[in-house]
Image (tube, rainbow, N blue to C red; front, side, top):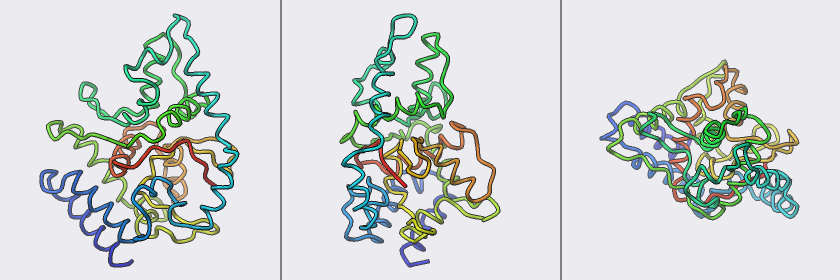
Length: 279
């Protein structure tokens, strides 16, 4: 483990054991950003929104070629059609949101104090369906992923701006739970998320390189070439947990929502650039 990885691990391990008032979310985020900027001093902050393509020149060249004919375009088109389609009562998804479509993706995930939990974009979209007497989608349903692809595309260029108000202890608790998940070892391989995406970032796993966690949430959903289709962020969480031979949680579980909340907060200030394309 290099010195900067030791530094970040020490800082964040200490903050896990201390009250939030001593080491709060913004202190964590500053240490997180400093680590990646120290590890990759030639990479501009904004570039971390591009994930592995920010730090691996060969992968970036391949990605730029793919982006000439993006494989996720069909998802954007289907998502736009779904967004505009009327429910049986004549209303649409747009009627559930006070913001225009280009501002919605940047609002999520968010902690809703009245509910006492983190609400993701997928949950908000299903809440809309339920409020209009429509069946909610399964969280891995193509229709729901397409909707998030459309809203991500609409929001391109908007900055991630997750809020954790100091006067909302529930939001701080959800953030701390997500952070604890991220740094906790699990599975038969005894790996934490941070082992791959902080300590070993940039190293090879078979033919691929491990991407940085800074910016992880900005480009989802993504088209994965190995799967031949689109997946959402929490499907990627599920796959990672399975890869370390641990039992995955259900999509949109409290555990995954809090993890998404933590990671999105770590990427505050980066631009949304989804949907993306990954191997």
